[in-house]
Amino acid sequence: MEFDLEDPLVSLEEEQTFTISELFASESEHVPSPNCLTSTHFRVFCCEAISLILQVQVSCKLDPFVAYLAINYLHRFMSSQEIPQGKPWFLRLVVISCLSLASKMKNTTLSFLVIQKEGCYFKAQSIQRMELLILGALKWRMRSITPFSFLHFFISLAEIKDQSLKQALKSRASEIIFNAQNDIKLLEYKPSTVAATALIFASHELFPQQYSILRASITASEYLDGETLSKCFDLMQDMMRMEAKELMIDTSFLSTETPVSMLERNTKRQRI
Amino acid sequence: MEKPGGGGVLSAKEAFEKLEKVGEGTYGKVYRAREKATGKIVALKKTRLHEDEEGVPPTTLREVSILRMLSRDPHVVRLMDVKQGQNKEGKTVLYLVFEYMDTDLKKFIRSFRQTGQTVPPQTIKSLMYQLCKGVAFCHGHGILHRDLKPHNLLMDPKTMMLKIADLGLARAFTVPIKKYTHEILTLWYRAPEVLLGATHYSMAVDIWSVGCIFAELVTKQALFPGDSELQQLLHIFRLLGTPNEDVWPGVSKLMNWHEYPQWNPQSLSTAVPSLDELGLDLLSQMLKYEPSKRISAKKAMEHAYFDDLDKRHL
Image 1: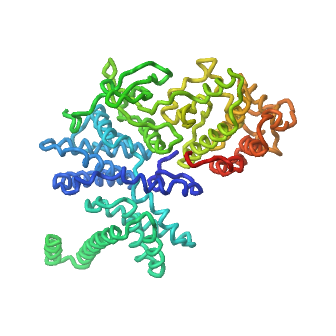
Image 2: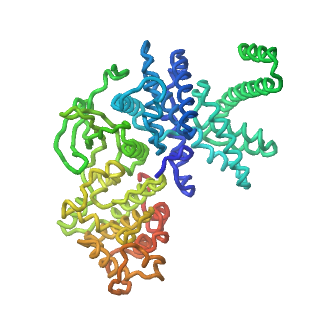
Image 3: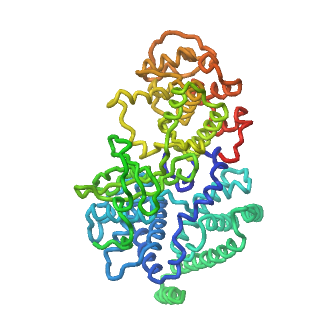
């Protein structure tokens, strides 16, 4: 059976009712431990590591789900460890190992040589040792439950008949989830909450007339806490505003190529 | 290289006291052991991690992850932990730590055969329900077992709880059939489409095995005790009739298909005379030739045969 990030527990839709409550029951085993979220070291380390992972994703043309899974492993692993100081090689080794594990779970061929074409080269033995360290810390729970796992369930609550509409909703929600992976603040929220929030945003953007129905059916779910959902919504709204601003700045830069315009762009960016 | 977070974690050898070796196979050894910290008895399955130029082998990674996921169900033997250690040559070994169960269904049935008693009908019903529930759980996660047999169904004789074992990597500890004559027993529970060389398995192969186990619980004898693949098929055909394109579309195109003696189907009650009408109906739905027509594990749980079973603790 192929491990599918959208359905880590379910492979047949007819069996879904058998496992949906289990999906919600299991998700807290696949998030970072809460204490780390206040740590500056954790945030700095993870930001840098995520940046590296996304670089590899681009240069190796990786499936975005592989990168997403690698980032999930990174967050879970680093939240259970002390961040080592004065060992610059450690970050690279963790990144390579998380990418390696994620690609194996997704049955993607990803050789160590390709990942490491830039920078220092680790021996296979060192990477395996780090892989085993990560596996032990994560208790070999590598079939991660992520926001993608919940999209199908929440969409089904709204009883949307139009298949292309459902697909568009899922695609846009997935895009929102991918874009959100940079923001460490979202780690406070369970994957199901992030999924619900992303869907509400996607429906508001794409199908305003369906929005109120979808929002009502999602928030009515027994598995979600309304207050937490509201906070997550506010956070994601802030992120979306930031995304919109970035887009606006880029567009305005393209429209005029004067040095003044470029200077203005840099000033705005610094202010943000 | 320092190991962050490595301090304070006992190695497998330090954490467990091996009591006795209870199994051995191509991939490693199985021990009954005691966890020193808690005194708890566990089953330790040891496997060497092959040195690979690309780190931890993907197969190992995926299969242990599956076992971790499936361990949530009460009717699947629980993988409690995965420990790393080193063998005498300094190679990395993995220890899969499973809950230990005192007996299995094979021993259970044999004990009744020896005393000449029949297994109580309500006991059969309870065990069968648990088996269907465990199989439904695995299938609900897209996992086939493919080697269900009484030896792989562990039991607690005090509580009559039943658990499925030998899934995934754990199954790697089963010895290959060709090396030991007594392991041809695994043929007895094998679905006809597998024997006929079908390349694409479905969940129905496990349901066939469940049906064979069901009949064996009632009669205390294997339903189809073949000693070769051909004999296994002939055993099946003698009872259920030789299949043809009418009862099983596509059967004559399977790789191992030949001309066989033509038998007419017999009533299942001739093979399992003491099973009641509802039980015979459920059994017949488990032993359909055409895989897609076989009842699913989940549907089996809803069958009327189980209506009078108290399911509150199962």
